[in-house]
Every structure is written in structure tokens, then in C-alpha cells.
Image 1 (cartoon, helix red, strand yellow):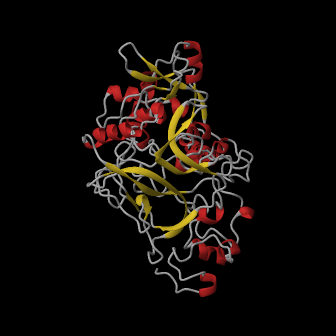
Image 2 (cartoon, rainbow, N blue to C red):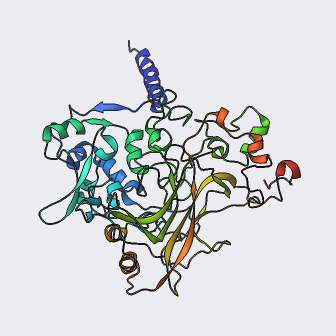
Length: 477
């Protein structure tokens, strides 16, 4: 007689196993020894023997292409946008800054280029997939615990990122077999270090998140849920979830990363109806991240018109204003952003600054909520007559502090213009604050917003004054 119980039992075990994998994904990272799959690591081609499809998926991702579909940018015009073809108010652009050694007067290497945080081995990403491009993917930078790399120059003068153990085959074999899903440490080494220093750029991605206590972040606390970055951002097929408020492209244009999903905090998220009424108009981050840059200061103002020389590092930089324990600014956001793009006239805001990334939405917009932001300001060169922003070839500037040649070089690279005339203009960028979620006991209380010294700028938010006192009309549904 045929045994009909066996498939049912196997199905039960399969469901249980699936539940355990899902449950543990927020608790710990799946680790697997690759010792049984290969003997010697010979670069990415070793990974491709088993993971070619994964590499093809990754090739099309934003982590590799550094640009993608940008439906959330209202002025994108169906263009693919990202780091490679836009600019920012930190190191401005990879244009002319991709790879190479910059040395100071002491002969010390002070920069290696923007590719230091690209998940590739040094080639500029191409939209055309090829064997060369697939083998350029550096799988270990995101998947091997303890992996480190550095920039090397070959006999032809070409630059390439290689494991620091590339001459030690035994050590390289050991590291390359320590494969896991990306850990917080792996993610933070690029996402926290961007912008020139620890936590300089984002403000809410501090190295402390690698091993925080619960008072610093309730989700990532090692003694708590111990959630890894991929627990929220993992997505599928190497396409990460989430774009914040100031990223151009999106890996998952049809999915939104939100706290109030059924898998997380549901909707409504609170037992208290008053709090739920607030959550209909206010993003979770507003109350639950009252401060950012709590462990490491963050860059709040970067003035490229005033070169600064560090005698200790023997290196030039912009004049940077760092700040710690920063209270966010608050603005309405409906999921869309207006970006300042290359070759387009400057988008002047009411205060006279150029809006680099401006969240869209008002109190009258039913899709908008109030969000917490880091408000970053800068000074950048503005092309005369055209009113286009110009990036800076910072790799030229770091060593000698000569800003005009660095601007002229960037204008040639980006716009094919020579001997340009420019002025300096103040810029504004809104950057969403989403990490460093504190326990509910440390969340904002009513009077933190509605008291006499409340942190909200009610008039800027579209109210006549404190809504607790004035009781404004309800928002549109």
C-alpha cells in the first residue's frame, strides 16, 4: 500500500524549516562554510561557477550600476539616475574621481577614489553585461567575514581592487570560505564611511550600530532582536528595499519599505488611539528618533569655497562643520522628491538656496506624512549664465588645495566646457533619518512638540500655530 503520510510529514517539516529561517533572519546571519565547494579562491570566477545567475542579478542592481529607475524623482523624465550620473553636496560626483592614488606631500596615499565603496574590482560599471563585468563584481566585500581589500596598480598602470591577502593563497582561501549573508559590519564599512569620515554623510548610520545596546537602537541591539540590515533591506535577487528620501534610483520601484507592514508593527501600531491618530499623519521616525549623530558627529555644512588644510593628515578638504546630538528638522513627505540634476537650471528655494534634494508634500496632500530629516547645507560652484551646478574633481583638490583647477576639470568632464566662469551658491539637501530607533520610554512626549519650547516649526508645516491649542481643520482624506 502506498504511504500517503510521508508527503504530509515532509510538508510539515518544510513549513517548520521555512518558519525557522524566516524567524532567525532577524536574529542572526546565515553562515555557511564553502570549504566543500572549492579548494582555492581565484577571484570572482570562482564564485561564478555556482552563482552566475546571482551575479547577473547583482549586475543589474543599484549596488553595482550606481543608477537605476527613478520613478520617485518628479523631474527624472524617465531617465535612469544614481551616483554615476548625478551629483551631491559631499564629494560631489564620481566624475573624474573614480579610481587612483592621491598622495600628499609626504608621499602618503590620502585617497583611492569613489570606487573604494563600489562593490566591484575597479572597472567602471557598464550597462552592457559581459564576462569582464561579471568578473569585476567583488562578492566577498558583502559576503565574507574578515575580508579586506586595497588598491593596486599593475604593470600596465591599470588600477584594481584586490584582497590584501592576494599573495597569501592559504589565508585568502580561509577568508573566502567564510561566507554569510551581509552583516551589519559589512554594510557599515561603506555606508557609514561615505562622505569622507565616520557618519559624515548620513548622520544616522554610525559605526556603533555594528554592536549597539538597546538604548541606541532597539532593532539592532545585540542583546535584543539583533536584526541585521538585510532583515529590512534584503529584498530579492540582490535588489535592496528602501530608498530613503534623497536617493535618485530605486532597486524596488513597486515596493515600499515601511514600519507598519504586517510583518513588523502593523497598522495601527499603538494600543493608544491618540498615538494612532498621530501615526496617521506622522512617520514613526519623528517620535522614535528624537536625536541623531549620538555617538559620532555628522557633517551638517560643507563649504567648498573655503579650502581647509589639515596639517596632521597633510590633506586639503572643504571647510566642514560637524555636529553631534542633532535634533532633526521636520517636513511633509509623500514619497516623491525633486532633485537638482546636472545640466538643469538651479532650483532656487524660497530662502535663496539651491535645492539638491527636496521632499515633496504639504499638509493638504493626503499621501504625505511628517518625516524627520537631516538638513545638510553646502556651498558649490554655479556655472555663469547657464545656472548649472558644477561638481568638483576632488581627487585633484585633496593633495594641493587648488579649487579652481578641480572645478575646471569637472566642467570639462561633465559638460565638455573649458575656461568656465562660476559663482558660489548655497545648497540645501533633506536626508531622511531612519536608523537609531530608541526604546519607547525615550520617544518624544506630547510637550516635546506641543510645549512652549516645542521642536516643531508649525508655521513651516502649514499650521497657523500649535495645533494642540488652535485645533486646525482636519486634513483631507
